[in-house]
Every structure is written in structure tokens, then in C-alpha cells.
Image 1: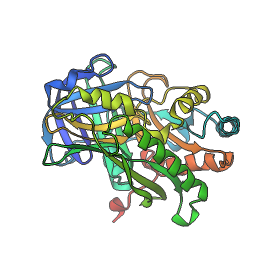
Image 2: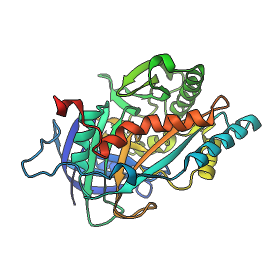
Image 3: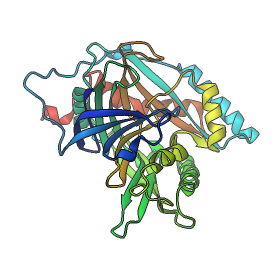
Length: 365
């Protein structure tokens, strides 16, 4: 097994073991540092790494520059008419009382001229769209089930687990809901949607935390990112079982909280059924979870797999293609056209970077 991976500004080399937590939930009990890539549909793949690095490896003299698809080569799993029709369908479900909110996404796809450049794309994204949970993974095993690569500019924390000095384990999640070009363009709908999803996150964490310890520690904070702004809230709690002393709990923690509330909906079970009905194919690592679990330390840093590009040898969208997902949370107050343009807003800058049509400011200086 060979590969390289980096997330949350921490790199690792030499993956030595692969585990599928769906079929082997006890795999992490042997300890170590594990890269986690969970699909939206529930598959949780993990790779154990032998070495940790403190920085992203520098570009070598012979390393090729990123070569992405041409701008006009990108296609969408849902056309504008189809996406707006899906928004209307969700609003009908809201009116019927089936769901309060559902996140509807589409997957952009384009031919990948030169496969295997996850690290090169990660550098382009880091320069042109820096994000709190940026990173990449490129793992080659000869088996599509245990191989793959992705590059992420995720701004959203799914799960962060840390330890107090007294041995108490805490967890937090920081859902993003509400997006606009500027803070002045955020709507009342954005605040309502954020509060709704924050409450869903609170309910999710109550499934794994000690009673009475889950609380919203910040609500509706505005976060400025390149080209747009978000509303972010934070929910924390004390874990019922400490994974540092019970490492098999990692699989249970993920199973009880995936997929993230912000990219599913409320109630989650109804939203997932509607998503399955309205979206034409699986999301894969987009809207899943990406990051690290340090079993020995009893800590983790997992991001929601948004603003993420991925490629694999085989998959539902065909071979040798680059994929990127974008979506929006739909409520009764949603306007179909406005929601389509929100998906465009979230994708435009990153697609331009991947297509080499937006030169990062750092590179023009």
C-alpha cells in the first residue's frame, strides 16, 4: 500500500493498513493514526498511517503543475430545470408536513486529463481558497475499494473530539447553514435554517453524550470565506464513553452521527428518503466526513466533505473523471431560482480554480 494524505494542516505518509468500519467496526482498537473518509451513503473507509508530518510536503522540482478540466467540460447531475423542480418537490413535502428542511445537491463532473494529482490540486485550492479543514488524500493499493484520491477545501467541522486533563472526552460540531455573497445579503430564512439544523445537531450529539451536557455554545456567527459568507453555530457535549479507553466506540460514534445534519435535513430520516428520491446518484465522499482519528490520544478532527473534489478509477459517474458536489438547504421559504444560484455561488470559485481559470492572488504577487 502506498500513498500520502493531509488534513487539517497535518500530513502523514506510508499508509500501512486499510479497514472498512462497516464490516470491521473493531478495527481501530489496535490504536494508531487513521485517515477517515466516510461516504454520505454510509461507507466508512479508514487507513492507518505509520508517520506524521508537520507540514504539507513542498513541491518538488519535477512535480507537474495541476492540469484540470476545461471550463466547458463540466456537466451537472441535475440541470437547472431539474434542480429547481427538486426544490419545488421539497417545498411540497414541507407543506405536507413530511419534512422541515432537506439539503438537495448535484454533482459536477468533468474529464480528468492527468489522474493522480491530488497534491497539486490541494496546493491550488490552498492558495486560492484557503479553508479551516483543507487537505488531500492520494492512496494507491491496486484495488478500487481501498484506493482513491480527493482534495478538499472544507470550511465545516463535523466532529472534533478532545480530552481534558482529568480524562474526560468532549465532542463538538459546528454546522454551517446560511450562505450569501456578503453578510448584508443573508436573509431571515438563513437564520431560521441554521437554528433548525443546529437543533438537529444537538439531537444527534445527545445520542452519544452524557445526559444534560449538550449545549449550543455559539449561535449564528458570521464566517467570511473567499467569495461568500456563512452562518455557523457550535454545539458541544461530554461523551458518554471515552474512546481513548474504549477505541471500539469510534465506529459507534460515527454510525450514530453520520451523515452530518447540515447536509441532510430535518427530520433526518425523512430528509434522507427525499434525497434518495430526488437526487439521481450517490454523493460518495461529498457530504460525508473526512479527517483524522488519533486512537491513542482519543481525539479526532473530522470535517464535513463539502467543497471537495474527488476522483477514483471506477464509480457511478464513469472512469477518469473529476467530481465536485454543490447543494443548498431547502425549506418552505426557498425560492427555486435563488437556491440554484446558491449552488452556483458555492461552486464557481472552486471550479474556476480546478479549471485553471482563476489564478490565486498569492501566485500573481
